[in-house]
Length: 492
Image 1: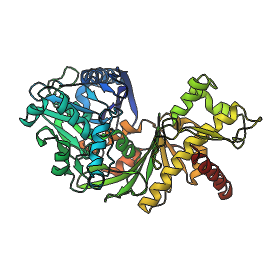
Image 2 (image 1 turned 90 degrees about the vertical axis):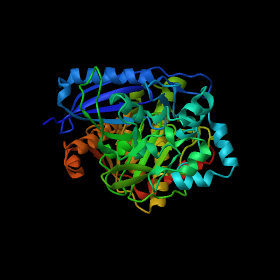
Image 3 (image 1 turned 60 degrees about the vertical axis):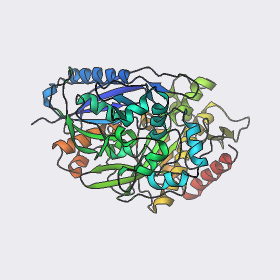
Image 4 (image 1 turned 120 degrees about the horizontal axis):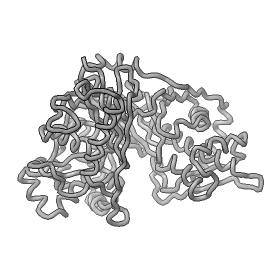
């Protein structure tokens, strides 16, 4: 029986493909970047053909590096940049416009108009999201409104819309399947969180015809089989899909309500499993679908800090305090503490739960005794303190106290940051052996659908901890750090 899983992690700057076995060992990993397109200030696009070509190339490269025959692949799992929007022709799969990337702000006026019409509460109640250009619904409206003839062709059923998961399944299956999973659909502003179906009223508000929409499926099932490819034989099941942050939550085996993960990248993305019913946030968080496996749906609360690893990059590129990002831990360890310095890394405003786009970075507590080491340490502390604000909001919204936080992403390798995160939260930080948890989630979802793992308990047994960071800070000291942080945030 085939026991290998091909995991496609299609991200914002490139595509990564991993080949894993049933023990979750990574046999190969290949990444290929593609160009970013900036037509105007604030606009961001990708050429869908670049995405597809990097996907083909990384599939071929990963199978070759792993020494695995394509016919021995049990299934394909896909995880993707979530809100990025593509519209293509059904007859030949050719895009009608570049993909509009999640970062793109071109639909800000559309969102402002919807708010002016008093629709913000309607969208939040139905979708769990805020009216923001971040999400897909206003992006597909823009394409239909601005590409010559697109709206007429869409209403005639000639065009297909999808997030990148949908586009990849279409291409991998030779056009046999136009599908998305519930986690990606929940990021469009078009799906009702409770019915898990497209909402006709919301479609009407955004002028999006049902004829362009994919079928909404679970996150773990056989959607289609490969067909007509030069890098894979026909007949391999395409069997798992989830948006990148939900895939990371699944890849961290956060299968129970109250379990949470944080992905440390350019920003920090925190998701908490809230169980089988959606939890509405009153504290600036997003409500989203985590995944659907079988008949069971798990929901999540999500909060994001705009700046995490980017603060370290600023120390390197803006201030020249370090020459390489990996140096920050060594520099921060040259001092026993931050010397009373607090850094609020609001270099792009403040995200959840504050949602203040006008906030600016603040460094407080400076005196003649402050050196590079103190600034470095305060930067790491600022990253962790932002997360503490988000997790406090999650606990208050969900009514569930955090028992541990699982971590992944590049900065999760920083031991000093992880220890401080444990100290300031007062809970253990659990770092897995495999930090590629986004791809791991896609692999687990595909493996469950194809019988590589019989159930989530079997999948969880294969997941391994590399290190656990235990809190060592007293309650009084923790409160002192939080008080300094809150005072600095008020000045941001």
